Length: 329
Image (cartoon, rainbow, N blue to C red; front, side, top):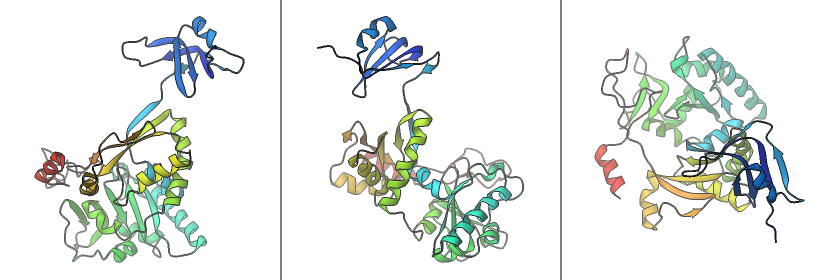
């Protein structure tokens, strides 16, 4: 019985990335979602049956799918229904987007948080993130915006009040509560200090994350990404539960390696969970923890102080001895 291909690609440049094999071939045959054969077009044409879908590349380049090795995909997926200021080149542009989103939330009604993010203060020339900027456009609702690198959160006065953060709030080990010249919090919380706010922000439910993730997966396909390492999760495992539910429904559509947050290390070790558990579409990875901050927030630990800030050397988010204990465990 002839084993025909379901799909046959030819007519362009095909790169295999195959170690020890031919890197460039003329054709590739696919059957049951897996590579059946690669090689010269004349040879693979024998696998072309009456039901085979032939794809003429028309001189284009065909590459293997990409694996994104560090992604926070749940946050990315939820951003579609939040305010996205990733491309805001100034504080003014960011405030226009926040104001428009706040107006939409007012029309919808209810007691809601304005969530979103993507801000990058390093490219802003007009102003730095401060609670007063957010108060001007959204004084009537709590606002919490994640920074582009997700190592800081920017809040307005309403959000700070709900979290009980004021000038008397003590600094957090491994975190920074930014304060102005009067000693008042600016609304920017970096590293572990962001936990003071996140504990009062309503968490999305499983159906919310499932719907958002399902809708966002095609955006990965369009960029050639077919697999990713999800580099974070919450204590209640919302990311892992989301991918499990999508897989159960047959809607995952990408291959996921899920990292376990260090806050769940004891529980994971207690039940004998090990890296590698799972199947080709959903597997358990390693333990996610980090020693210091990020360059974007100027919290990454440095050997010299940051330019223009002689007293800022970075933030130690986790004590080295504690990190070693986790690693050994």
